[in-house]
Image (tube, rainbow, N blue to C red; front, side, top):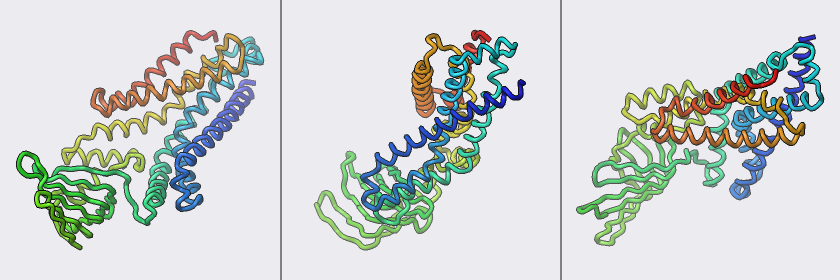
Length: 354
């Protein structure tokens, strides 16, 4: 009988899990597509659909904890509402044992979240970014989407607007030279630049401006030492979303050897691992909240679930920002919210009438 009951609870929870997962994924897709509608109308709706398809794995990872929480709470609320849970307890089966299939489903959801996040999300996000920036620029030029400022020396500052770290290319580069009392004396603007060797860059379609003499000279090509090479450029353009945890860990080790501050990247690394455990955490919280329904109304369950989801994501984002700003250690900022919510869930479980 117990095996049949386990199968029944598991199937019911799985049904609500899949339904919630699909509902929220469709919602994410519509919001993301509509928010970038103006951009994709320039090149065709097909690029827009391809963009959101490539982002589906990321949506899945983000929605799995939400789907787990709602499925847990709705399943147990329905059993409580129909008095099936009362019958089960009368047969001598505790709520803890009754909830075992739900915990097992949450465990499977955590494994699924980890595998998708490690094996599929990095490549899919990279492809979606390529499509978005190609459409945005209306040219076949893959860029990272990040602009960088850096100081070559005390009197030379460089700005690169769009950078392709793999090919060591940049679009729209500006170099500002300062004189005495930090006043600008000369500026070089180029439409395109490529790293030819070490720190040497070849700039094309340049405009060299003497600011004191108000003189502008157009130069087709110009080689200049910018004090930054391909290796440095790659380090400044790291996108953690496009990396697996193992690859990000290797990059962090390289950055540490090079003397870079890796605090933000460590927070992202630990957050990748922490989000995979979130389905288990929300299942522990969802079990007592699903069983406890003082008014015996289904609307109560959805309201509590929605409020808890919002509060959890705000808390996780807040701790993440504290970690990246250096206020908290990276490991603590990533896992502290989950430990906090898990403790609350265990406390609620201990106080539950089983």
